[in-house]
Image 1 (cartoon, helix red, strand yellow):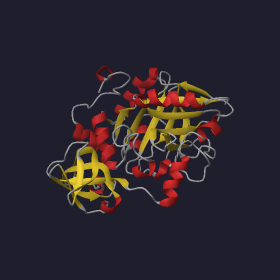
Image 2 (cartoon, helix red, strand yellow):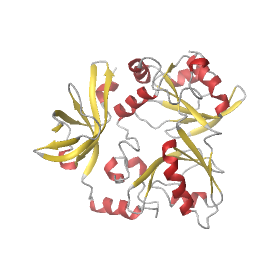
Image 3 (cartoon, helix red, strand yellow):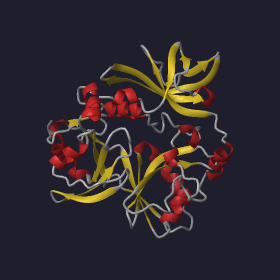
Image 4 (cartoon, rainbow, N blue to C red):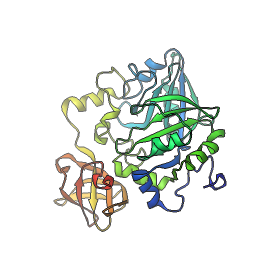
Length: 343
């Protein structure tokens, strides 16, 4: 793989590099390298940044140690999800990481709630981008490319120097696959990409990354998580902190927690030989009980697995329960899809 084959910085919007199945298998059993140029980076500075962000999002920023990050939701006052993000404590600033597509909604919300606060919000996306590696050989590939890899917990990061280039290494939070992000200036992406490919890591496009996301049972904002959804329905408890104090939408989140009053849950489904398209309604006993949000055919050692993600009423969300979607018979399944990750 040569630099001339790369799109943009290193292929951030490239769907594949010729073989989606092989790329997906590299993420599971070897090592894949991919461009995260579609992720945006936002810096928060100013003396009120910690207090202000703690009052904006669903996770605990007040007690977030330097060098660590958390996943969180941004809610509206009615408790509905406006976006999702990662927040990292860099000591003298906070760094937010989210999808570029969410900036149009997220940045105006931030501006609206900065009143007399000493907080400055700066979009760093033209100055800071990221590559990543994932798979059981991820650490080996990084070392082969000349990177010192410290021992990191999930969402912990460290600043490094590679060939005179400053970068930050971040441990990914997908528990199903070991992964690391590398934040750096766009001008240095091609040289690092080439070093990782030569390590060697297999170039991976967005199609294989989406297969990994679905296999891992991770919802994506805009597809599996929508503004109409409530935080507890998404099953992303990692995004919520119940003793951190007040934040936008907190009253609704706490009411749901205290009353146990959430009727739907995000879950997985398996079906053969084919699955309905996203948006298809799920039925049981002649009643509508949920909807499909993502579908995929996952290559696995035991063959192709037809799987889906979506929402279902909690009383039907029992592993093995059979339901119907547009004539296709599905079985409710725990997440992640464990069969896919077996050697």
